[in-house]
Image (cartoon, rainbow, N blue to C red):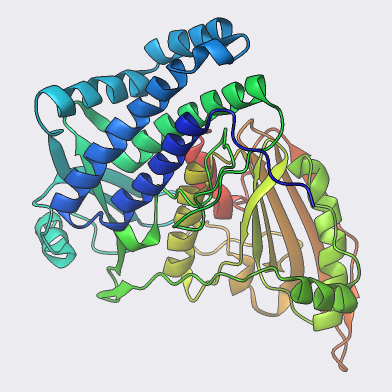
Length: 419
């Protein structure tokens, strides 16, 4: 048995792992102002200590002057890195950061109508009181869904929430430590994991899934028409060897979903057809891609139309958290072969068409670069329940359609800043 090699830059690497743990401490105590202040002070100083520890070892690191000088130049031009350094100096030499508690309010009327505004409120003001204050004006929307997100910001960086800002600094430092580690020794180090379990010696150059900057527990949702709150519930399904074995036995070998999302979509549709014929139904599934690699997936559940609006905006939040630049959405849908208009000249959705609608598997794909694809496979059921798949209809290109089939992904597309 070969012993694990020790870390060649253990002091700096351990400080980086400290920062990971401290970031979660800030997130876990987000609703406790004094704890946020305490943990944030520790995190800001800890991030600065990462570079201090690395500089102390520069004589043992090959090519240090070259790659560290590049890092310094990039850091000087990065507003977040400058804020991090200035904040550390303020904390050590002057006082705490001047934190402001904000409420970010998002109103969703439908796929197209939405608004977002930031308000400053006392940090412990109940959400119901915030909602009452905002919507006391009768001119404000009285229908749709409202989401209130709690936010802490530093007065010196008013446009960035602190979890988001410090996570970006952490990623930059992790990339630097990865460069240093590789320069000293390309082999993995033996630094042990610690609490929480996600704090390992792995060096991330992209956002970690555990560092969610839009967590559900910091948001509250209200259905204005129903006059009640909407509870957001998430379940983690562990992918164990036993679950994989059962899945392979029932559905066959898993489809390879790594690659360009546009090219992956037909493979997903093929597998979805096999699953539908086996189970007679298919749950909706969303895959999040970053640079052609799947970084997360989820099974959304829609109880009503307002719930669907809310869920897809939360999907857009997840895209932002993961820095995802591609998404695939598979679901069962109603499908119509032609268009019909109501008395006001609006297209009647297939779900409201009655007998001339049919069932279909639908795969929607969108990328941040502006590539889109839609795959529709109609199907019918015999009197004995057997599934008969029809011919797939494939539409792909760089422009969005006008018939609304991409409305489900509209919150994601808008978050990417595309028209």
